[in-house]
Image 1 (cartoon, one colour):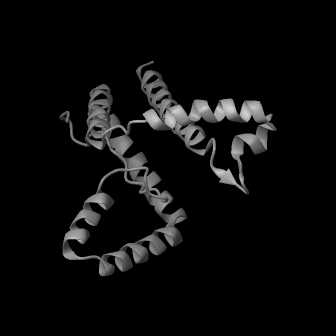
Image 2 (spheres, one colour; image 1 turned 45 degrees about the horizontal axis):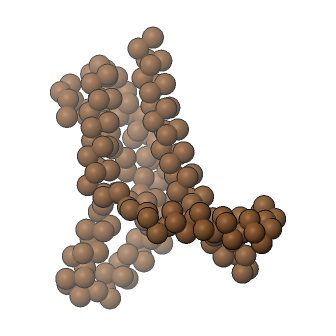
Amino acid sequence: MRRKLIIFALAAMCLVFVSGVGVGVVGRRAFRSTQSQSVLVEELDLTPDQRHKIQQIWSEVAEKHTPVPMSEIEKADAERWQAIDQLFTPQQRTQYAQIQQRFEARMQGLDRGNRERVARAEEATRRLLTPAQREKYEKLLARPTHDFFYLKTSTTLPSTSSSSH
């Protein structure tokens, strides 16, 4: 029963995350130009009046959008993992860590070519930057983000020891 609860909780969190990403993508891409028409105009065959009203709706959203500070996202993530970690027995923590390691290895294998190209691009970028810019660039690369076009697969893990975070 407890295992089912943990699996359900993890699945629910993933669903919430994916839903949030979906909403963000729709909002951001709602009026992205594709051959001089927005995705909504192209896909929904909107009338001129509908186009105008929908553009007003999404313009207001864009104007009032405030990004969530990365520190708050990291704090929420740490609190979430701490709560999840408390649900695991030491044996379950070890099993979870092994599952995550296998997943990470598989994802890295699947994305090896992209990762190599990204690593070369990052190195070429570093060579173009001043020392001060390079320092800022390294901080940008180190922070967990969805701002880049590629995904870093390292994920937050519950602790692998018997103690909580």
